[in-house]
Image (cartoon, rainbow, N blue to C red; front, side, top):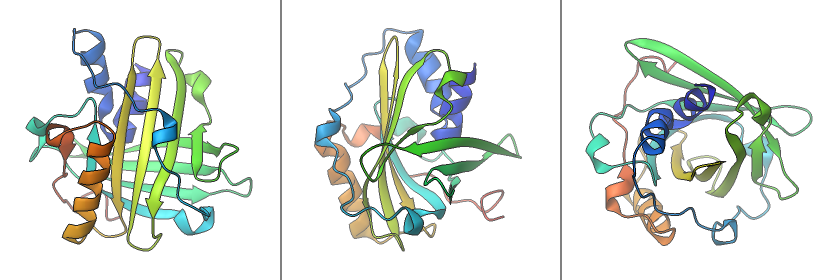
Amino acid sequence: MPLGLLWLGLTLLGALQIQAQDSTLNLIPAPSLHRVPLQPNFQDDQFQGKWYVVGVAGNAFSKEEQGKFKMYSTNYELKEDHSYNVTSILLKDENCDYFIRPFVPTSQPGELSLGNIKAYPRLQSYTVRVASTDYNQFAMVFFRAVTQKQENFKITLYGRTKELPPELKENFISFVKSLGLTDDHIVFPVPIDKCIDG
């Protein structure tokens, strides 16, 4: 159950992962981290703040969710030790759900891991990589969760606003496809105001 809540907080992947564990679903393998770039000269202080989830793609997502998947926001609050308190705010059953988790830096700038991983017994590792950002408009962030049974990965297109120029969405689609996903794995959440504009 806690693993499911983690995924929900990170893009409602919990339900998808539980379904995947209980089925014979063949997921596209997660790419090697060597294939996922890191933002050069990553600036953790400039990355902090509020981001809207404008696009998301992953090996447990399907195009069928398009139109049903609601936009949510994620706030990265930088702490003195250069870790982040990360809060995602989602609309669920007409209520605002808040999911808070710590992301701690690894030895590579722009790469983070889940700080309280022991709270999720089935989770073996959780890696976050800021692949690309201009800090003011967009960011593309790669997430990989490894359990004993499978690897789930996703790429999130963040925006400082709810709308991004078409060329940034096209760059996101190209990046996603370079990691082995297809159009069927890409979802652009429906913009909303409730909860995420607080």
